[in-house]
Amino acid sequence: MAALAWLLIPLVAAIGAGLWGSWANRTRKVRSDGPELDGYARFREAMERERTGS
Image (cartoon, rainbow, N blue to C red):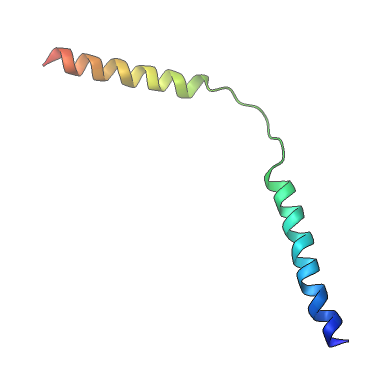
């Protein structure tokens, strides 16, 4: 019976890992890159102004 318990531990761990992996990889609400790209554009403009201003 103890051998069966030692065989069930990896099986339960594999099932748990599979469930966690599917939960972690679930599709989430899609978000556009708009705010990030806008911030990057502002950063680039500021760097260009800094370079040409001095």
